[in-house]
Length: 120
Image (tube, rainbow, N blue to C red; front, side):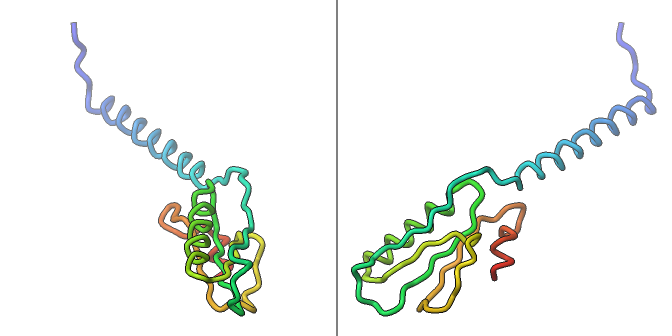
C-alpha cells in the first residue's frame, strides 16, 4: 500500500534537502580553501650564467603544483641563458635587482590566492 505525499510534506522534505545541500556545499568550499602543509622551496638556477641581473619567479601554492610549475619555468629560462631565482611569495622576496618578475598562483574559488594578491 503506497502512501500519497501531501504538498506540505513534499515542501518540508525538499526544503530540508536543499538546506542540507547548501550547508554541505559551503563546508566543502571552506575545505577547498584550507592549505595543507607542504614544503615551498626557494631555488636558484643558472648560477654559471653571466647575465647581470636574474629573473625572479615567485609563486603562491596550496597543494604544491604551482611550485612545480615555477621550478619548470626556472629550468626553461635557465636553458635559455637566464639566471633565475624561484621563491615562494610567502618569503616576501624583494623586487630590487631583478630584470624581470614572473608571478604564479592557482585559481581557487575564482580568485588568486590571498598571499599573491597581497604581494601584488
